[in-house]
Image (tube, rainbow, N blue to C red; front, side, top):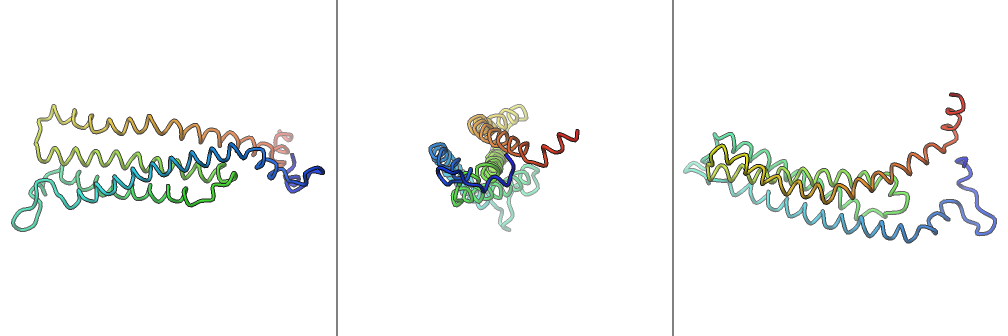
Length: 204
């Protein structure tokens, strides 16, 4: 319908189209609010746990320090991998906590599920995914520094470290993808019904 009709009220209920939509979709909105709230809380707990672990790892350097206070493995390439991945994991996990907290503190109205909440959820999941990945690389690098495995076991260790990341991706991203696809379809249908979109189609 034309966009200016959105503010018109029907004769029977004296409600706008948005008011009627909100009333007829109260159950769906409640389920969506509960779903996104539970997922955000669970992901926040995981992100805080990762941040705690990698923050502690920064002060428990693999191999310890020498008499001068420098790490024993300071010149090892793996030590630089450990340091960079540890800092990256901490930054990513805390950033994901901020995104999930913004979801939890938002009003979560029906209009928010169109673009704002799906975007925040996707960013939060992506940050959490990479924080898990970098934390496992940090763990593998620290283990390799201490144990000094042979090269043939190094690949196996990294493969085992990536396994939790794969599990997280398989469990969480399909739900997030369905959520985003549904919102995208609704958004495209809404955009195609705008009056200036129809005029362009007629000109073509």
